[in-house]
Length: 393
Ligand code: PLP
Image 1 (tube, rainbow, N blue to C red):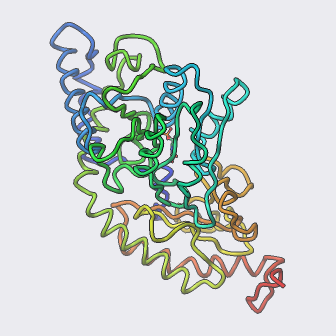
Image 2: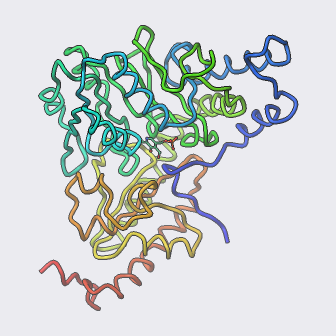
Image 3: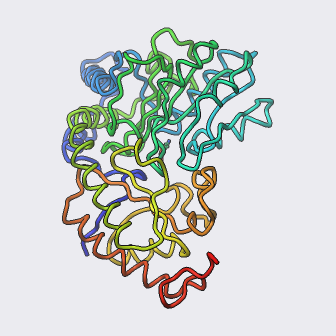
């Protein structure tokens, strides 16, 4: 059976070009980049080239790039660095829809004496910057707001938010794990202090990430060990992963137009056709200001998990709620924060595309989804046989 992979916000296929440049680092180029000899030193030079490729995607300077193991490590490092370098400040501002890499860390920090403000979002997942302005205090150590939401794709105005934070002397971090490679990012045009990205979301392998730290920002490492990454992140480098990430960043920079035209067109077609063919379905999240590859659609009165199982039988991969929480039957914290009604939140499916998806795949999904939804609704106690909602009355 052919797989139709529409779960690219969970993880992506490693690009063949990325695999190709990584392979030598598992065989002949196994030297340690910190070694004095040429054999290891040559690997160090390649790491520097990958740093330049990552910097290029972000409009950053190469020395502002720190390689980490993943987006979660980058997020944790940014928050912990802000707290360590400003020990007198005990307040952190995030949003209600942040990824667990930020929210769970803050929940972990709260009992240690930190005050956490979680900014609300409206029914479309949109953030009101006035709430940020009101929440900033002299005690605020850092604001961390995601650039693009992993479940809905909604884009936050992080560049404006960073200005607001700076006006009050507060550091600003953004989790750009879903945004990088999908929308243009140019750190020369904003005042964001720290930014996280993750390799496996942009066609590099799992186990590699980046934390961007603006030149001049006070920084305290999270992993303390050797002198790697100019003492900003201890641990022998994941050389193959770094080389792969560099290549993936180069490809992503070249594919930005394709993401924003080709991928967006396929996403819009999928969304438009599903809404037209399936009654009582709706999109969750602000459709005007969204990542080009993501659509989160609710099919009322049925369970997202059941939909995924039937899709799975046809080889179609997607997610219900967040990829990281799809083990639980709770509606996702993102949809709850948006106040999506219970009957809608439960039946939500996130489709996330990539540059590898084809029109044929999208047509296949458009063709199969109405029967899947109709079959489940026929079994739903809230949906009568005439195809009408009963529970709404
Ligand atoms: N932040 C966001 C927005 C994500 O979507 C994810 C992964 O789903 C992460 C952080 C964590 O990244 P990683 O899986 O590399 O730890």
